[in-house]
Length: 142
Image 1 (cartoon, one colour):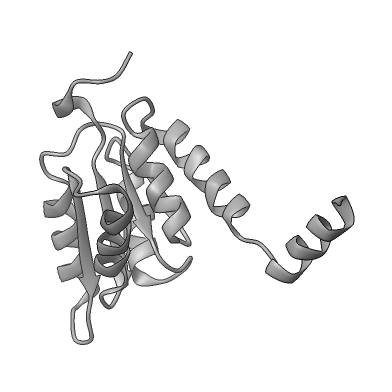
Image 2 (image 1 turned 90 degrees about the vertical axis):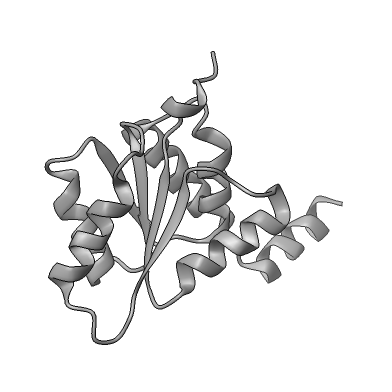
């Protein structure tokens, strides 16, 4: 059964620069405007402690099991996400791409937390293809 709107996990995208904002805009071109989705940008000169505070504020009001998606494993946005997983009821994934983000949007009505995170990671892996190899395999199948 689908969740009530206030129970639907939010998605917070935290990235270096405006990458997260642009992923959201790109996804909304495909699937329309989304509620409970935010992006926060780590810009030059922002102190990691200040960014941590911004991320905590960004998660305020989001449902339990919300998802934080970051760009680069080991980078400040990812490290802050990892720190928050330890004491907040959220899940976090890194290596965001458009396929992962769209999957998160689609699945969050029926999944949350770690279950949502695992499904999103699977979509990210499956969305990465060597186009030349894919075309060769199609030619060989004919």
